[in-house]
Length: 310
Ligand code: GLV
Image 1 (cartoon, rainbow, N blue to C red):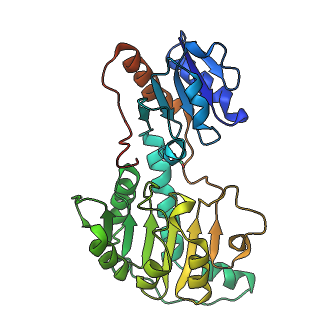
Image 2 (image 1 turned 45 degrees about the horizontal axis):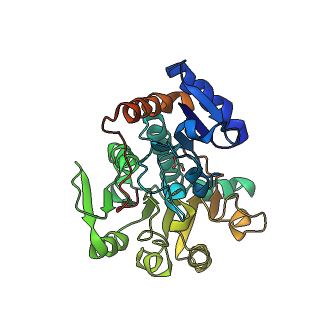
């Protein structure tokens, strides 16, 4: 039985080598060279792949996302009915995301955009000292990534709130949930960080209404999915000086089109979906573990809950 890898051509070899380093006996096929479709038992995929295609493999037992997000696997037509989907919960993905969030929270908190603008104009001018204890950070989503970011930011002394779909308790983090909780958090948030899964419920969560609830001068950081942000609404809030800056790693569509206003916007920091990149050698052990479990009919790990959408 064989494993099918479906990702960017330049990432295939790293994934193959990482999986083989875990288990040299694996038979790995690189899409589109799947060989006999009946031999494919697991597909390890990223967002280049058409899920309709996976219906060609009659003995498929498992689909694995090459990242933390699975929105690309769940969107229509979705995975073949009855086939479980697993995602990655990976220490390196988590710590890289924590670093990126801290980087951008600190960048805004420590007035880096203003100091860079002053440098460009050769202006030697001290701005008022920021107060960490008064800079309230609101995190949308307290999954593995949101939780790690929340803990790192509380350790730095920021007051941190977190918003989740259903109630969630986290030490030193004020937890809010539901629609009322979302509005309450937004009203008190100076730096908003989005680390939500993209589902029909969370699509467009950062829109004109939610941006208007943020205090004037707030910042927006999005490392989740481009679909969480209504781009026109964010641009309008930036241009109205209601939002002071945005750090964006994700867009819809990706790559961000060359003529998109985000590229040249003086208040927007654009990243090419690079906040946290999956390292195949770090992720391979859990992928191979799941393949073994699927073969043996044992319970799988890091399974996606189709009803929740993540
Ligand atoms: C990256 O976007 C991921 O989902 O891991």
